[in-house]
Length: 268
Image 1 (cartoon, rainbow, N blue to C red):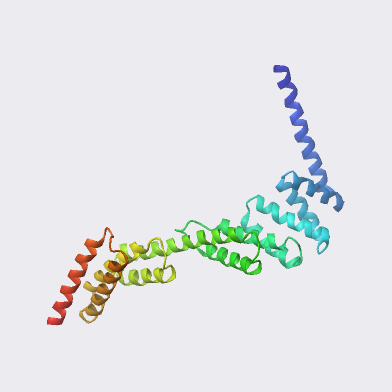
Image 2: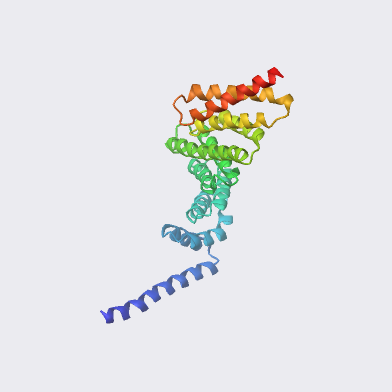
């Protein structure tokens, strides 16, 4: 067993050194065809960095040729495999512009959209990239409505929309928590308008009742009546939609208080 170990270590080193020597020779070579074959071989072996490095040297020499199309698409794919999604997305878009009739255009557009999906951050962060991803997927769906990737696209779009919906709901809730009730009312109503089937629908209507009431009682007299009326409207919507809600008792108390406040205003 010890003898085998002593034999394997130098053999492994020889293989590594041989591979490095071959790669270094290719880097220094002026033979584009030799570099092309090497780049393709490294690509098949999933040596992405080596393949990319060689491809960068030779792609300009094969530009707008059948071989250039293959090389550039593999260059895009290698970048994607390295999870460099910003660069990969950029390269896929360039590929489509340079080779608009390529058989790989559909895949390039799809993977370009997937790069934006991969770059989409957590819902609590800026969602610009998420919206870019939705736009790109929608463009793909419009261009290839019969693609076998449509179901995947729809599932991804639903997931991204859910992230945007959660972001919008959390922003509205933050207004409520910081006692900015006017902004909370606007934000909650906007969330319902854009996402009428939101999974947070009950909570949104609940916080609308509370926000409308808290806005009303903290308002100047000239605006109090209208805002109390809005509280009653939001209460009626809540009761109609969620008659079995665990928050029903609380919103009923708010409704009673709002009615009393209105009666006082009318008597005065």
